[in-house]
Image 1 (cartoon, helix red, strand yellow):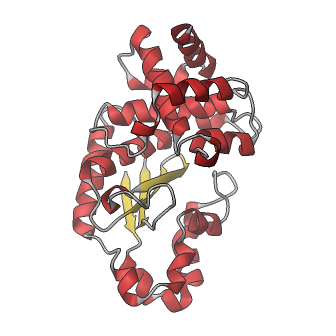
Image 2 (cartoon, one colour):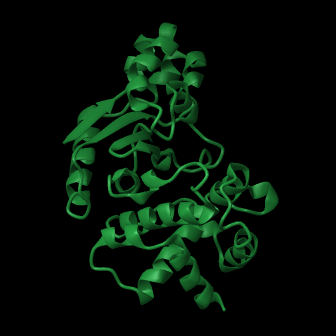
Length: 271
């Protein structure tokens, strides 16, 4: 049911001279025309793996982690998640976490980041000594995305609107934070004042599927006053607010709530 594949820094180093060919062999089974990413290069670019071509031996090996420990963490997390979500099979691919602008000034232990490419297909990038709480939280978050019951897989690029994105990320955040401690490095920047300004802007675009608009509102743009990952904080807030007045006994019930219901509940709260 659970398959774990680790693409370690030492393995990458051994293949650095033929990195493109090596990565293609490792990543091509994670993509196809029905997935969110359809080319193996898209995954390599998303996780900055091509940058490894220019790193020294010492720099690459500085990203090495304990494989046995990571296997244990993934297995334990999956057992916990499986008490709440159902899976036929799930594949977790582990990659090295290189620094991104949004978290490179934070402790390396919380550089963990991930992407779910299709039902049951999770890709996680980890630092050499990941914070256990943050790693398990993010694994649970991505596993929620990977549930075959998740309605996001019924959407197309034209129907994956901003409010659908809020539902997808908000329910995943609500689920993962119900299981693991909250160590999100971006949460403190989403103050009440920021949230008020954010809502004033995003409410005009709830029905848009335009990736340029969604990207700015989902992932943030500090130069325009939107903190990094503001969309995730807002998404969690609207789902948490909904559950206060509409309690759920089964986390899967949230899959079947229309995105507009979360928004309507939030509107009634902010009036």
